[in-house]
Length: 488
Image (cartoon, rainbow, N blue to C red; front, top):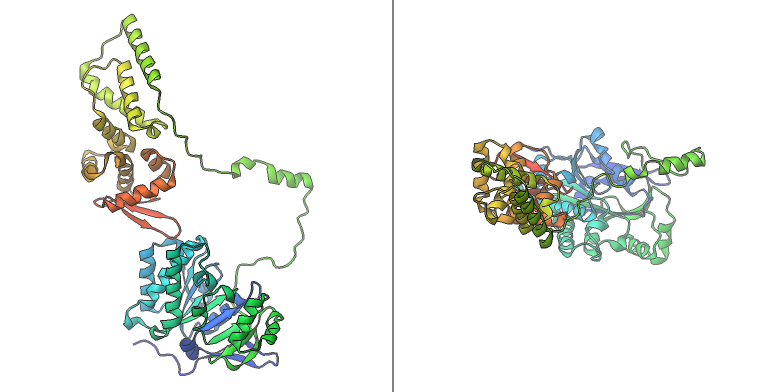
């Protein structure tokens, strides 16, 4: 049976100017929620850290952390740090369900993701917390830092579907989360940028220093202060907040937030002495071997143009003339098939051949066969493209039973998609941890990442592969029927 919280759970978040402690009633907070506002440098993150540290032993905590400020809670208080970039959408939702089931205190670290990825990841995570089974509705504080990102008052630059998703998640947390045991604590730099229906659901407020009139007026309204008193908010020192709410105090009170045990990595604050480096040495540090820092990855190869018909005809004519004038040796007909395969393998190994059109590839193949005076049945265009794809993927180097299995899986793949599918299948069979994106792009004859994504989407819709997208941009590609998986 789950442990029950004590009847009263008071924590001290700081002190008044008189030295009297300012306490928080955590049980009341679970029922009434909290809004924190303060400009950058006001001590907002310090306040959240103090609140989390003091209540860590009393209640489960879930922190949505877009800036990587709170992973240090793990060492001192045992929070589990979850890197949002490492998990797919479905896995993130499964994690949220397990967090509610096992009452784990966690920090969802979204640092390193693009802003829209952070928003979608957090929204799906919050929705999964909200939708947990009724038997797992244990009390939990859910802290959302930089809440104006996740509940914007205006559309901004994010996609409309992302905005609807995140507003729904934040509204559920603040409006309907109480019955499910979720107590939202939202912190923002700009009240004016936070959706009003989210801010309005909080009954407790901690207002730090802010300078813009529109934010000061909204803060004063929430604190029940007259507008002429709003200037008081502008004059607050760092780490000082005006507090009000049933979980703190019935009348506005100024509080200085107490010290914390954990914190960010050591970083410089204020001024530092400049390096004592001679100008010529500094110039050398800045400019020496600069090219190596520009782009380490080789640029995508240019798409070559197909040979002109006149060039092909001239090449064939020269080969015919040389054969007629010289005593050309005959080719053993028994080795024609083997030699054709060798020509296809050599053509597939050339860097620029995959970027030519199928007709240009086939024409080049016929030209080389003609030059060598190969006499015998030639593969038609369809057979050539299939053998070209097999050679390019390295399928000939696999065991017969593996090659047959992969080709059985590839039977339903369109001809123009066969080469990249075989590359994926070969990598999956080899158990490689990473598919070489350049190899996949070359097999598909493109240098566009967008075309690669559309290719994978199409193959997944056809049921040929299963793609697992991670919020960090990683992509796992699995081939049904093969045991291994590949990541790119």
